[in-house]
Image (cartoon, rainbow, N blue to C red):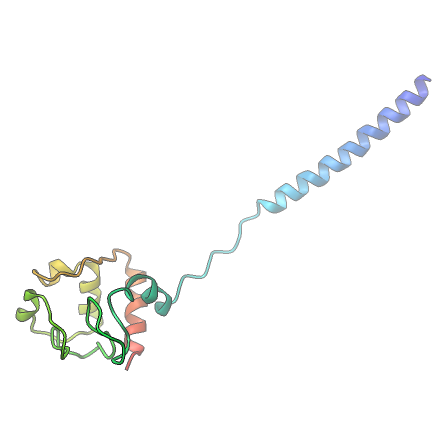
Length: 137
């Protein structure tokens, strides 16, 4: 009887040990780091962060902000049919990548009296949105 208990006990120990080893291996595999997620492209970022107030074509009705179709090279405050805030009356520049970057980072600092509330502190997000806007023409 003692021999039977020892044999049964060893079988249970080794059997349970094997199951525990498999479980540990599965847990370790589940904890392996995942690849970094692909950052959203400019079009997706624009839709998520800008499209509430701006359109990207001239056919959609005007929203809170002007259409950004063909923004690169356009004079600031010069979109026909859009009523700009008072700060734009003094704006004397055309939009390019650098001015758009400054504008998106802090609109009120660039044009005092502007009413755009959105700010984007992350340069990589600003760059992706600006690259998307550059494609619109």
